[in-house]
Length: 256
Ligand SMILES: [Zn+2]
Image 1 (cartoon, helix red, strand yellow):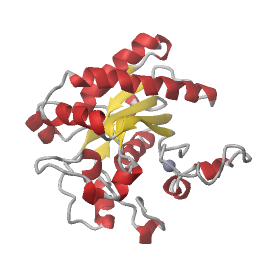
Image 2 (cartoon, rainbow, N blue to C red):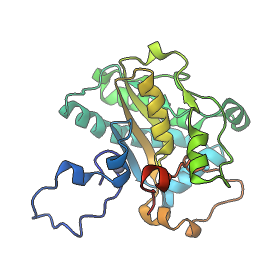
Image 3 (cartoon, helix red, strand yellow):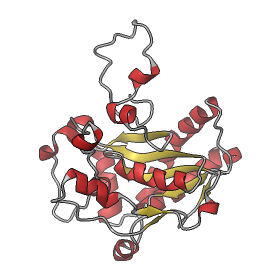
């Protein structure tokens, strides 16, 4: 797995466990190698498939908000590991801020809730019960979404990337300056949203940003989207924000 974003590197089959340890730069996926992400690490609890996918759907599209309670505890499971890793590299969490990826105000009003906020609330609560010394604090509104980015279909990769630029902002930078931040969302697809949010937070002075999502599509699903059934009314938060890196601009393209 990529050390930064947890992307499956598929190198296990080429490098038997007995070979010499890989160099750190060999343990990064191509996007992370070429354009290092503004977050320290991104981790997911599981694959975006089966039961986990059904649960996320039920939460978001059927309004079964109680599900966020369960999923938030699972998020806390991966955050516990992430926090220990942070401590092992001298970045021990203290008074860490737990921020959900914000939803545009109009969209949230329409839905009635922000699923990422419910997940973050539960995760922060569970984390506090298990690692009170980290003193995790849920904060809503420290990171905001300036405009909706729902309809990205039909845009070229470059336009998608441009469309996401400047969407996220920190209204009061002094609130995040020098702080460690845990960014919470339901799905991590290309990392475009995680990168955009993290960049806004780092520019506002955040000391470090750590990303945790409930699920992450498997590479197979990612590479063959034509096999994924998508309901007509389904929106793909991480995917409608997908900013495929323009191969011409950045020298690479995700999903290839
Ligand atoms: Zn990576």
